[in-house]
Length: 454
Image 1 (tube, rainbow, N blue to C red):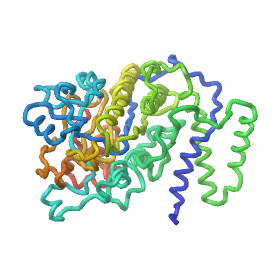
Image 2: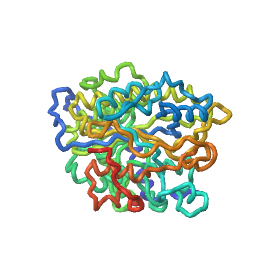
Image 3: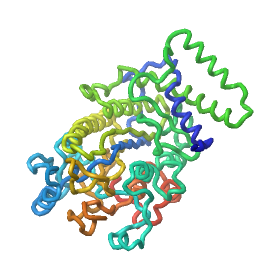
């Protein structure tokens, strides 16, 4: 039987308690006339997790000459025709890489200088070459090619023995005081409980992407009495440490819902129309995040961290269709979200970035899909991004080549998750001295900052 530690119990209880919390802030009227701080010292990180392991090889594709020929020769039936790709013109020079056609809504963001691509990122215990990998002369991350292990490393980073928290949660641990008396936690998930927002000394909150954030029937009289009864019960029998801690978690969830529920259920948001016609999970999650950013002064937040997710990227079969369908949701949702931050005047203050379990093999399998890989390409989006640029190094597209850990195009990362996380954390406000507390493994890599943030 697995042993549930006190800390794990409280963390999971917090997620459940948050989902069942009550809102009765009837006097709060949410409208576009609420006083909003346009920019200022406010900053937000929005993590978009592509669950299942997105195939990066058909996300950012080499566009020209020999590179495209190498791509199509290996991809075979998964090749995207060159004429369908969306060229990414860099700040200087000609377009060498292109986007998947269903990500075309992101092109204007790229062209406007607010989006960048980071090539071949992945979990590393230390810098790794193929020769060192083959001879066993290098420390390797635990559980390579395993969904659960790699999700843990992407969201947590650092030695396996220390991964009881995520790097988003550890950022909150260091900067929580910046939010002063904010009415809700700094870290918020709209995609369930996860490691990324879990801190060592701070609490996050999990809210549903749709519906209300309250006890059932919260607006009727019996439920209001029930809320008061629950609040009274939480003051009783607090001698036991576990009981007291559990009660505190529920009390915080109740208090947070007093603020959150009117904000997420309101139809008066000034940016809601930007998501019109997008009736899918990722759009609903990002709309909710946009509403909470819109209400940042009501919340009293100078810093916020959000986690959203889109599932379905474990494409062992039928990948062309599946990935196209997922990107047809992701592209418009990210574009609407960026437009929302622009309309709110906080585009330079909000940075959105992608993570995923891992990349996938370059060579297709027999089911019209791809298998688990390692390194992957990711997007960073926002007004503070040094955009229209590519960071890191695109892998050499050769089976059993210098970047292939085997013979199927499984790319050895040339940028560590630690460097990716540290770059975002530094922009968010984490000091150089605190960085090893947020990204414990960063000292193993030359260059803690990849330079893609201003």
